[in-house]
Each structure stands twice: as C-alpha cells, then as structure tokens.
Amino acid sequence: MISFREISDSLLHLFFPHICSGCGSDMLNKESNLCMRCIERLPATGFEIQADNPVEKKFWGRMPLQYGMAQYYFTPQSLLQHLMH
Ligand SMILES: [Zn+2]
Image (tube, rainbow, N blue to C red):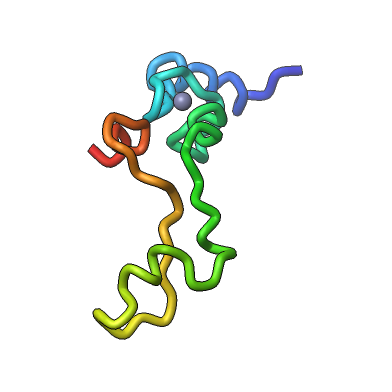
C-alpha cells in the first residue's frame, strides 16, 4: 500500500528533482548533494589518519598549527574544481 507521504514525495520529485551537483544525474537521496558515483570519484587523500601529513608539513615553522589536513587532492579541470566553482 502506498502512503500519502510516498505520493507527495513522488510529486515533489517530479516537479523539483534532486540533481547531483557533480554529474547532473537524478538522485533519490535528498540527504546529499552528490550521487554515490561522484562521491567515489573524489580523490581522497587519507590525511585524516596520517600524522605529519603533507599539509601539516607545508605550515611547519610558518604559523602555530596543531593539526592540518586536506580531505581531497585538487587537480585542475576535475570534479572537485567543478564543485568548488
Ligand atoms: Zn553524480
């Protein structure tokens, strides 16, 4: 049996589809701005589990810093640049 909530969600999705910010595909998940395929395409650094990672080393001696990291690698013309713009 289809609930009123499912019907109203389907109608809302028909007129206001939830589109992935990365690839423009139609998404059912309203909780994220990216589809799973785009999330998997983002080049993660893994720096969050690496002490003395390259981001921290960039700031050594330049400013007091307890911890630094980058979540993703940045490359020109990439999905990440598209998302930032
Ligand atoms: Zn996508």
